[in-house]
Structure formats: structure tokens, C-alpha cells
Length: 316
Image (tube, rainbow, N blue to C red; front, side, top):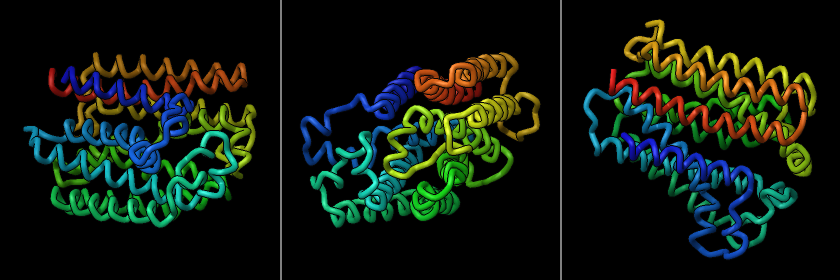
């Protein structure tokens, strides 16, 4: 359990570095391996795998390591496929933005055909592997990649509602683990879905805020009002509050087999209030730095909440 928690924090730290653009390896020393990691967004994929594993541990009575490994592999392939398809579709727009202009396809280090083969193979492998766990897990995995690739990605340049659509596949991994463990979709995975669904709004709007000018170059308008204004900041606060409320619901016994002790609920509440603090700071300061701090707090919030949920289950 300790090793899993350390792994989770390491993955989330790598994810933060990726969002902030601190990793320059793929730009300074491009190679087949680095381009493969970039086209599939390996760090993001691993963070999603962590969420799925957390959901699995919450739903299972006895850990089946074969299922756990299959879930990790299947989840990784599905996320990698989604990211590859996304970069194929957005290749011309990626070339316009500082954050993405050095990706393999825009600079010509990887052809569209090669990326398409990778995405297609990953899709098939992901669905097949998840199907060996159970049909529902494969179904939700397929739904996730379809919405992300065919609905969310095209909408990003057309309407801020794309964030709402993107939050659906983004919220699936946490509940996917529970479905993999139980072969059942009920109130428990629904609650896990709701938690990660509401969390994504303050998280991605914070990113959309401090990358506003870069996103504008590519024609992406991710903020709910289309601007870095008080209206956006207020909505960030509102969705942060919703995230906090959903996160402590299991303590009241309304969520079936998904339970949370009073102590764990207090810890989760404190973590949520910490994230809310940074959301309020963004409302007050209206700066890119405040948005970055909110993004960082949101990443550590969701990671620590998932760790608290899992640890609480096994020690309660």
C-alpha cells in the first residue's frame, strides 16, 4: 500500500511537469522512444491507470493480481490510443501553440499514418484486454475513447461546452476500476464517477486560464465564459464546492458498499478546503500564477483523496 501511494505521487508529479511544460527531453533529444511516449502521453496515461487501480482496490474483496495487471494494461492502451487520435486530429492546431508545436507529428518526426497505426493497435489491444476482465469494463473503455476522440476533440475549437463533454471520459477511469472488480455498475461506481467528473472543471479551467493565450493561438476556448474573468472564477469555485460535497457523501452511508470513515471524511474535507482556498485566491487575484497554484492543488487533491479512500477501506 505504501509503495502504491509513493507511485501515485510520483506519477502525479510527472503529470504536473508535463502540464507545465518542464519536460524537454522529447524536444532536445528526440528519439523513437521519446516520440512514442509523446504521441501516447505516457505520463498522463499512467496517471489514469492509477485512478483505475484505485477504483479496483475500492471495489474488490480479494485482490486478483492478474485482473489488476490486465486493468492497468488495458487502461493504458485505451488512454494512449485516445491521445494519439487526438494529436492526429489536432496536428495543424498543435503546430500553432508553443506548448504543443514540438510534438512528433507537427514537426514531422512521425507521420500521420504511423500515429494512426499506433492509435488503432492500442484501441484493439485495450478493448480486447478489458473484455477479458468483463464485458462492462470493455464497454466503458470503448465509450471513453469514442467520446474523447469523436466528440470532445472536435468540440474544443467550437464551444467551451467541450470541457463538460471531456469530463465524461475523464471521469470513467476511477469508476472503471470498480466495474472491473465487481462486473456491476451501481451507486458506488456512480459516486466515483461523479467525484472525478466535478473535479475536472476547476482542474481544466485552471489550465485553460494560465494557458489562455497559447490556447487562443490554436483556436481553443476552454473557459466557460471564454474569458479570464470573474464569471469563470465564480464557476470554478462552484464546481470546487460540488467536488468537495460529492467526495464526502460516502461517510453518510448513501453509497452502498462504498464507505468512508468519519476520520477519512474529515481528511478529505480538509483537502477539499485547501483546493477551495486556491480557487478563491484565483477569484481575488485573477492571475496566471494563481491559476497554476489551483491546478497544482487540484492534482494533489484528487491523488490524495484516492489514496485516502483506499487506505481507509483497508484499515477500517
